[in-house]
Length: 217
Image (cartoon, rainbow, N blue to C red; front, top):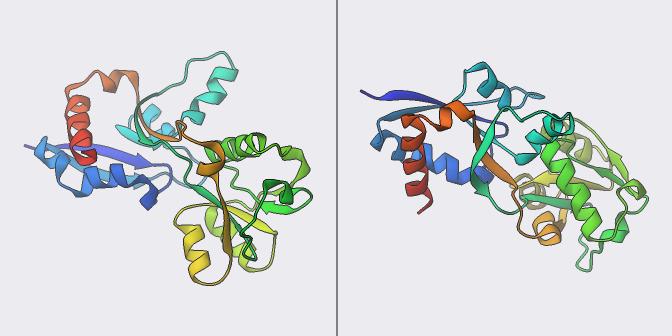
């Protein structure tokens, strides 16, 4: 008989296709696992579901461990497999800028995604490009949907979004992609799969990992 496995996304996007393919491609069923997926409520990390036991595997990011580590505590979850090794965010402007340089952001209003991992990586991209983060006017409009709505209404000079939202804005003529965070940063531990230490030691975890490897092959 199949065993239910609960998988939760912090965000649901085609960017996480390796995990989506693991569920949609029948690989988990081959291991006797019946996937059920959810998306964590806005403002809540999928790590919360791991801690309360309602979730077995979470799509997350290493930044989720920053808070506990800064407090001298051990993070509640382990990141045991990589999903993406590059930042999947882009910078969108209101006009095409073939010769875009990061120092153009000085003094400009930028709608920046203030999620833990996106914000940390945006700051790192600024650092890599020699741009002090404090030199830009970083706006926090809330969720991705609110960010896009604000940009459409004329707020901000640039917007920082995860694919495929930037491509959609460009397709609609509402903006132009001017920079890739991946190109600014290079390879990194961007998004990953997380679970509790106890679950990782189970047979279910081993079956999940076999399915995940098959989906990525």
